[in-house]
Length: 296
Image 1 (spheres, rainbow, N blue to C red):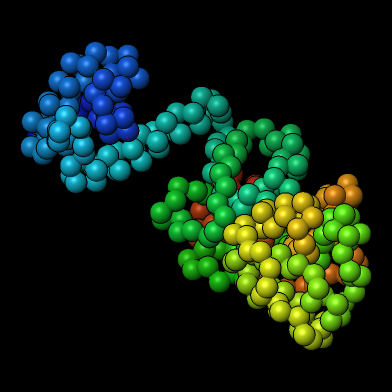
Image 2: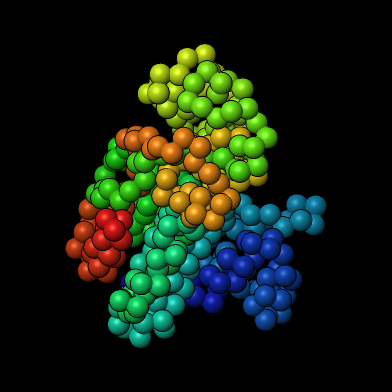
């Protein structure tokens, strides 16, 4: 090559300076002097022929070129960091799997079972992050994810896990303090807790049970299923939630199922991953394990 990339140390200095928008604070983080940081940035700008920072009224700001450049540089630095952690953790054996999961499913169902996976496959390290909504694997650096929906996501392979059974739940205190809980018109006197991303859920449930005269869309609205669950525990109203997420709360007495039945919908939790990842042996090991856990 007739040219060279900026050094890794220079790129780290640049990335730190963009976060702090201060050469002094970047120097403190990296255990350098302020003049050393300033010199590294000036040398990068001279070498690249592009202005990365400007000073406006004694305030350091990123140029558009600097803002675009650091986004790509930060992703590369994060990838190198993750690769190094993976190597240190596994010493060349096993590997790292990056998984995204909805928060409620992760805390209520997945995490309590992970000790079994770790004991069976100690060479595979899971790196789990939460994502409340489906995403594009090209935009997020994950090997696989748990999505909740109807298996209509493009460009992925999806294996159904569980979660299509819904139950109506509320706190014991709510059941005691409010009018009789029956599957009928009396439900108009109750608070129906709503999830904003599943706005037809109560409507479908009421139609299935043949209940007239109830406004299916009235009631406080919450963005995430975990928030709906906590609202039910707090006694704010009736919630219609995946049975798999509330089974422990019911067993502990924090929630009750006043009607004792389940309502089956098309939505479910799925393990999804890009087709290109299908041959990854680590992913296949986790896939087989989580499908067995769901089946049990």
